[in-house]
Length: 362
Image (cartoon, rainbow, N blue to C red; front, side):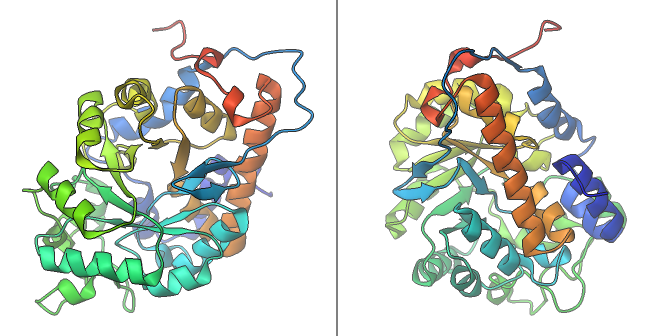
């Protein structure tokens, strides 16, 4: 049967993908408590819909950092798209461009950044980590600027890799011919990145630097004229502190529940973080978005836009570019309908009073 929603699309992807790939994409850290909580938290938010509002026309468009978006949705950075489809990140970039939204390319892309930018008709942003080798990081920033990326997204919740036991059990590795192509030159040992080691913890530890602090955020901002967005914010005090360090925006994220288990769901901490930044910079959110209704709830709680990660991979596994286009169209249609039913003709009308954050069981 043709999938009607992203849950059904994931079920099809699970059937099609090798177990090592599906587990890599879908797994969370340790006992996967945060993985489940991040999704379940949306079900506890109630929508207090308005009636007798003219919603015959709905406008989903918005803008971020001077870039127009057809809807308040971005493609979050996710690794190794060629594990899901041979065209990998190129298929994803084309689908994002066709939908009029940005794609954020992961450092762990299996396609060179230059090729991805050329393939997309929309903006491409680049996600990075601050490497132990600061010279490599500096060169990578210059490279992605030259390629034409429109923003940098710095992941800040990863001093070490979280322990994802499904990957360890499977001995996660990339098949021959695939690598983290944008990072290969930094491996002085001559290894093809990701093809050896048991899981992420061994294969990619060389990428990270557990000594990174706020001074390194200042350093990164000094290297580039691109907007720098911090991804991985969980606490209001960290959100408030970011205002002192020249960043252009934040992503409330728990890394797809792949780092610290028993961390809160992102939608739970979103309102406090929005309050802390006081509208001075945009706040994005990712984690658990599976319905257009989830997007409505996140916007009502103060997010300027949301990001999706795993659903993109399920789309890739079910038809490459056309599969990703289907994912984005599903969410667009669901958000459009949710806005109509909630009495919201445009994004400005999606206000805090539209939702109560928790159900009566709390």
